[in-house]
Length: 299
Image 1 (cartoon, one colour):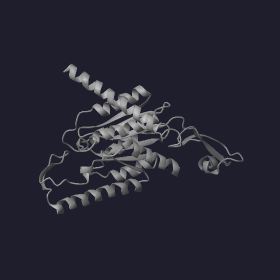
Image 2 (cartoon, rainbow, N blue to C red; image 1 turned 135 degrees about the vertical axis):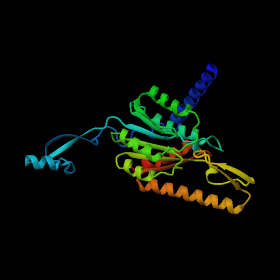
Image 3 (cartoon, rainbow, N blue to C red; image 1 turned 90 degrees about the horizontal axis):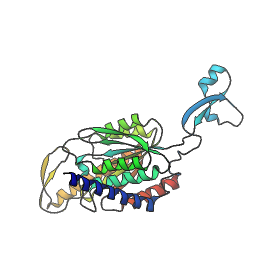
Image 4 (spheres, rainbow, N blue to C red; image 1 turned 180 degrees about the vertical axis):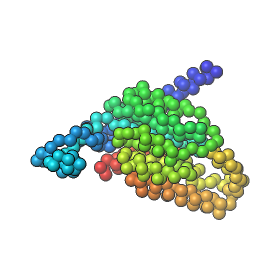
């Protein structure tokens, strides 16, 4: 047993080292600094009030203090010296699946590592909310490479999820309560959730910069023509036999899947969050590069 555990830990550490090398080699400098605009500056947290001086930004007028003192006052803000990043990580059974280069769970860890490695370089803190069928776990934000690797190891080495549903909506609500300072919130999920997660996404996006990484696999969108196929819902255990040789059945499946993806994209953008689709059959690092480059041009 101990040998098996030791081999598993060694394998996990090797995977994380390879991820770190790949991320730094191809993404270094793209997510750090200009990406969020939350580095030292005028800041977002309210500070001390003081009398208005010529040249002060009138948008910082403190009207309550002005009314109490009968003299114009402004309220300074505290500079954001550190960025706090939260990963909302999908640990449900629907991610324990993949038909291309890797499983969706491995892709999810890779995407989380990309944001983690590059936002943690200069002492920024990284925390996580992991929602699974048995519980939703909050991992407090910590800074430093050791803490980052420990968090990623927990994500990579977690056991496969059992039957049962978990709520992305609840995880977003927990993340909103835990992330007290404005920062970056990265959602890594396949968005196959029956709960009202769009409403909770709109709430957290009012305060934080939110990136939703939509994790998919080609078989999420298309059935192969292989005859009679037994499909199992990994979160409920429900079984359904489908005749995939039927062209009409495959077309209906593709249409419903396309509708689901379109709705997810619409909900994310409607919440004013960034939408980043990644798939097990594509170069996910290149997808992240393109996304970040586009965001930088927009900003």
